[in-house]
Image (cartoon, rainbow, N blue to C red; front, side):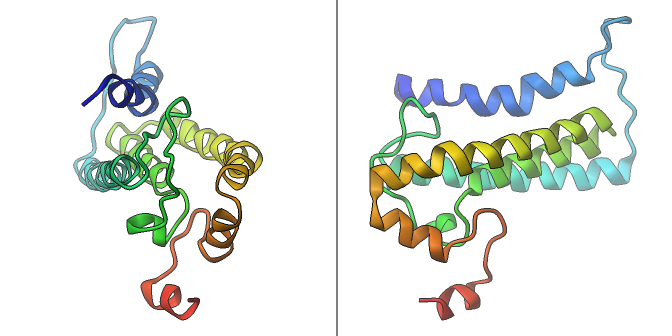
Length: 165
């Protein structure tokens, strides 16, 4: 792992670790008042594992196929439209949202649930108004065609994907 790849991990570690920990921390008592419900914690843990799996696959694809990272300062130089990206344009953020949802359930935290909503809305605006215009400029017609046939957030079923080609 080179420095650019290592530095790119700052984003998910901050988003999924540091910020939720701050939201859980009680600054008055200087403790993490945790109250677990076994069922919610189990469901949440499964969501976290699934979300981390999506994120790991996305990071791998951006590195191997895209020859870049998830970080805006080292973006992929090749447009990635295979793997998870064949079904949805933003699998990384989808995975992060699953992790945050899982954390909100594991820790029974309304604060993390609210953070999840804010995170999703801000990313939606960022992608729509900043990242997608930059991708259109960088990859031109290839990205425009990809954008037309691949949804932003909710993946198509494989049979729907095949019938749209």
